[in-house]
Image (cartoon, rainbow, N blue to C red; front, side, top):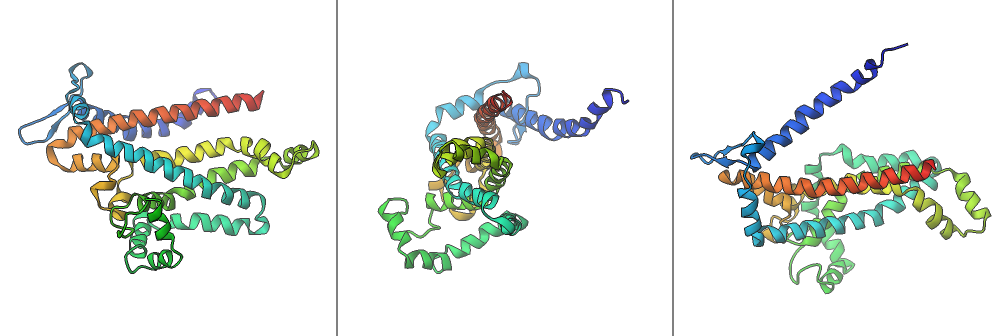
Length: 301
């Protein structure tokens, strides 16, 4: 009844939006990364790919001591925050999807409620709570959690939680992003047909066996989606570190990009670091798409 082009027209606004605010903007970053700067220390982008040079990338490669440690910290912090978010988020998502009953709506509201408040305000609240005389600091000291962290060398001896401590940055990342992990896992677990789990139980699987052999594999797409949803912004996050730590000891790659952009003639280096980070994240995204495509083929088979 309708011409074929009309359905494609529905995608036109989204395509135009992406081309304008992502593709064009990212190409500008690439042009700055492969460009130079003028006598006023302003970046001069090279728009023609035939004129590109890799001078800034060579500079980054020759000065690995300045950029290797922030990159290593980024991988460690994001990896630790992702694992901790999974340990917290999956049980919560499973309980809300399978055990909450008539309280499901209430728990979903509690999960989403922090997102109604500005991320900046939530982090500033934790700065006050983690201060030397803050409630959280006093509570952790009362139950000797800070002593445990010091014995594990996760917290420096005699230092407070806000004195450039990596563990504080990791906990802040978990707090800020874990709701975005819970929601896709909840959706994946909620879609699992209860009859499939009951069939596994009828075939002799224990509750633990049914969970690890049925529920967990069937919710893997939600887990992968949640990991991508929180890990990608964590890699470029710099304001969490600035608010919680404010120390070069915990600088991540996002902090390095922000510092280079803010320091006048270093803008091309900041753009080059952005390109390098984008390539890394593109690899992670490609792996996610490959895994979800394979899972979709196996499910359809």
